[in-house]
Image (cartoon, rainbow over all chains, first blue to last red; front, side, top):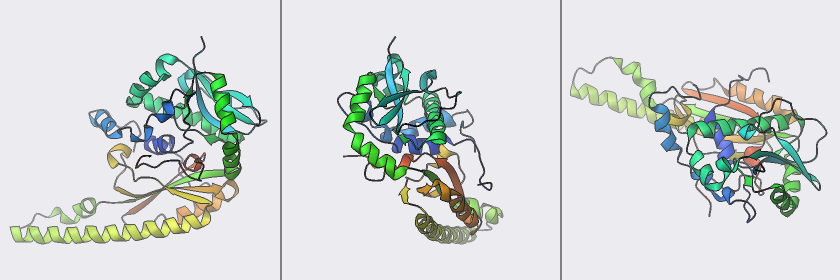
Length: 60
Length: 262
């Protein structure tokens, strides 16, 4: 796998998996946090805070 | 101090020790909670940050989300080095150990089935970007139009070039996805990434994940590498190997999609 560039994982790639992937567990004994609709977190709201003046934390 | 239980993943019992320097979410190194034939990987996290209300607001805080996502990923990575973990959705929290045990028992069969399906497999991410017509023709259209008529002609040319590029990208992405799916045990399409979020140049036309046996990964990566420079204006990016996040759902994929769940 030498040809693959290894860079720090981009946050968006991580969030694609952590917020849209993984097993979703729901149940009464959980705090129902699994029910929180993580997938629908409005990431657009985050963009403004990033783009304001700070350089993007996830690099290129 | 008791705290809540943050669960990263469920695995089959594994012999090897976890890498020592794994910090864990909230700075609590991951612990193994064994119940019957399964192991849950758990951190103790403070209620002040992980109860429903504070968690909800934390998730809208980019710095907090970034730190938590990276800590979560670090644990999953360390697990991937020693076993095939079944990753849970970010921020899956239980009140106490017994809550985790009850959950493991309730879902035991499905966990075991999924772990068997994922055993020895990793996920590779492949994204295809197309440079926008504006970017493409920016250089070409550098000369100022002499007249309104000239301007309209340039504009029309640019639009046509954009459409052709778009079509080529679609065909390229479809072909690549078919070829890679043929080499993978399973495939998933993620929603294209927002360029404002990714900071990546161009438009993301394919954002796919492929489940590939670890042993066949090298060939898979080579196949992706070979397509990289096939078409000008189109860029292919590979990420991985990941734990099989996109294939953790019971029916083979994520249990819901970007479009929401019912």
